[in-house]
Image (cartoon, rainbow over all chains, first blue to last red; front, side):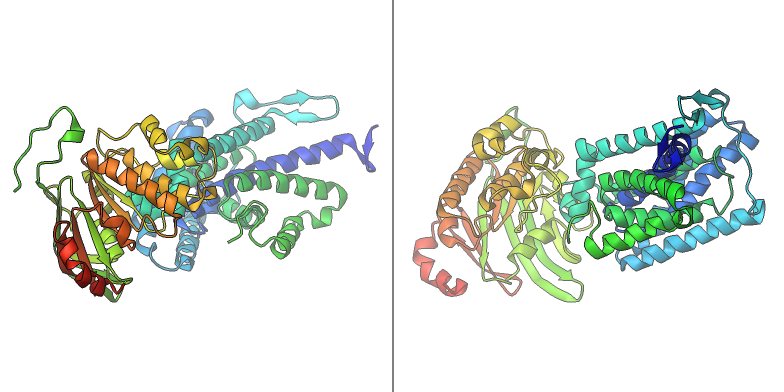
Length: 295
Length: 250
């Protein structure tokens, strides 16, 4: 049997794949956080809750409205995105002129409210969502079994991440967003409706989280606390990548998933902490993050 | 005179009719608790080039910012092309045909030169095409793929002006465009202003460099302590030069 540093190849690749899939979720979530932080300068602590709401919208949509997985891929992010826009318009905008700490506290409070309400109705144990028929089973590659659904998650996440990157870095709308991040007052003086841009950006950022939630539904138990468990790691990823850096969020997300996977192979005890160790190192050596601009 | 003008087919010849482009009455502006403008009154006719002169802190830049609604609070009246703008949303003001070039130039670091140039949305038809702009500013064409803030100060200034020419704005508010630039660049900017005036643009120029502004302008307003204290036409300038110098402290 082929061994890599004393570990069978199948185990090694299996963990690597698991890591990469976790990384895909980190990337999608930290990307949304980066987009929101860039323009709104808000550390969106409700992001995990939005991911959770995406998964719940998928689950409840199937249960009560007969919406299948493929429709949910579009409808759940749309619904959560619209919900996010209402939150921005009604709550976040009012505190826009205050210190950013208030935004953090407000979104943290919102996350607790969303989680608590859903715990009240559904408990914490979590429900299962069936893997869509088309993606059941898997491929027997030479050295390991690759479940179709996991391959799909990876593909979908990477495509959405890079489409987002392209939109922000290469299109006119993206130029508005980048410029609005740098100097919103001047954008306004050019005739751009910056408040509208902010609302749409927040909606888009949380829609990305909801999209990750849909992808997660068949993979993990759908439970009210699924988001908060993930969010702390995602914040570490954002810090490592550099606050507000789009490419940084994507690359760091995938890379941290891989590092976590590798740690599981060689020193499983540290798997849950390795990302935070990387974060400490990055903060010591490059406080602005790997992809961040020095302030 | 505020007559209604029929829209001619060649927009660049529309503006020499003497109608009011901008009228400011009793404008007060505040940043938080500080009261910066104390009742500014001025008017600018279409096709005019008017300067705002004064010492640092006299309120010249704030006047331009107040027109664009970039100050904390403003009261009084600012009528642009017949529309009262005190109460309207900030992003609607440029759409009345105003282009603003801030003192710090406001070039975006995260955008390349061409993206910076294409950034401001079109506010009216009849703006310069990108080819005309590159013809006027050949350096920008050569450096169109560079990051905006990698340009020299002069090139950044050209870019900050060029991008508002594309939008079809009919009135330009230019804040200290010659500040810190080499004489050869200042001369080039002077040539550009003459071309723009010949195209019928209305221009409000905040300028420290009086020798640059004097031969270009139709009228001068002098500001002090957030008010207009003097209005001098180009014809009166030679006889009142000494008086002006004492006001400006030069």
